[in-house]
Length: 235
Image (cartoon, rainbow, N blue to C red):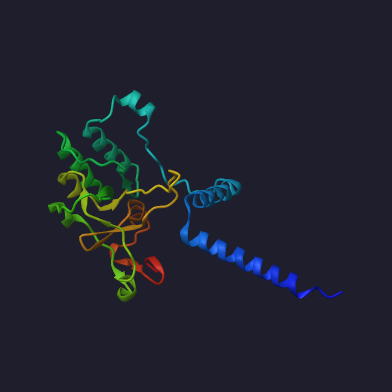
């Protein structure tokens, strides 16, 4: 039995309208649909379960237990100096502080000495976006090399206007710096990070990218941003 042409046309037209509707929603991304997409993304990770991880990463947390033992925060930096020396003696490949030591303190010299002796301490920085302001500490930043410059010029970089550094005695002895800026999705959950941010004409890596590349023994000149391929770490 042959199907009348009119119902076939209606089916095709309906399919076309549904496709157009989804394309419009994809382009406009209304917030309810965007949040639904985020929740489906979370659900996939929940169904997958916790992935395996290597046991060579240790987090020394500033939590209630440590505050109960060492006293109220902020702690004197001679404690951090002792921590660096202890971690170094234990053979830590890289020591990364996810704390901004932006105000001077009496024990900065001792802390800086331990950082220099360890020779593998990475510190965070934070980019601010309210007003443009340079700092004499900008010279300690190590920008990432960029290849495919014609293509990279077409990309829109997130650009910081000023930078919050740890105090100079610490920055001057650090083995690297990386930004810790985070940008939550509309539902308030952090699901991704910017692996680099542009600042004062330089492309600055994220804290995690800097720590990972240092741990892997990849020199800074071998961390290359390629507009065609993404970020290359060595080969």
